[in-house]
Amino acid sequence: DIQLTQSPSFLSASIGDRITVTCRASQGISSHLAWYQKTPGKAPKLLIYAASSLQSGVPSRFSGSGSGTDFTLTISSLQPEDFATYYCQQLNHYPFTFGGGTKVEIK
Amino acid sequence: QVQLQESGPGLVKASETLSLTCTVSGDSIRRDFWNWIRQSPGKGLEWIGYVHYSGSTNYNPSLESRLTISLDRSKNQFSLRLSSVTAADTAVYYCARGTDHGDYRPYLDPWGLGTRVTVSS
Image 1 (cartoon, each protein chain N blue to C red):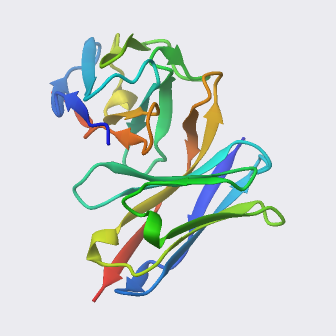
Image 2 (cartoon, rainbow over the protein chains, first blue to last red; image 1 turned 90 degrees about the horizontal axis):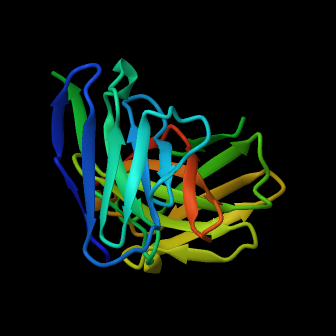
C-alpha cells in the first residue's frame, strides 16, 4: 500500500495566518491526490482534487499544489471555520489510502 | 443538494456480521462510485471500498475476505456487510459518493456524518 506522511501532525496558528500542510507519498502518485477537511460534528468535506483543483463552493483561500510524491495544501488567511483536521488521500493505486491528518488549532 | 446518511446498529457482537446502509437523497445511485470509509478510535481514515453504479466493486485487500458492498437501486441505497467482526472493527463508519472529475478517479464528496459502531465481546 502507498503510505502518505503528513506534516506537521499538529499546527497552532492565529486568525489571518498563512499555513501550509505537506503530504509525502511513499511512491509516485501522479496528481491523483485529494485534500479533505474534517470538523467535529460535521461530515468530512472535499477541498481539493487532482492535487490542485478547487472543489466547487470551497473558498479561494484554499489551494493545493504538487505532483509525484510531494504535495502541499495552503490556506492563505486562516478563518475561524478553518480550525479542523486536514487529510490527504491518494487515488492513484488501490487500495486508496489517507495521510495521518494535520490538526489545526487556534493559537 | 446531495445528502448521504448512514444507518445501522451501533453495537455488534464479536464474530457476527456488521450491516450498514447508506441512504442517498438528491442524487441517483445510477451513476458514480459509492464508498465506505472508517475511522477507528484515535486512528486515521481507512478506505474500505466502493461499489460502482454498474455493480462492480473494489475492496481494500485488508478487508476483502469479509466484505460485501452492494447497491439497492429501488431504494437509492447502498450497503456494507462485514463478517466475523472483532474489536479492531470498532470505528465510525462513513459513506461517501465518489465522482470522477476528469482523471478517472472517484474523489469523495459528499460524505455522510458517520455512524459509530462498537464491537463487543
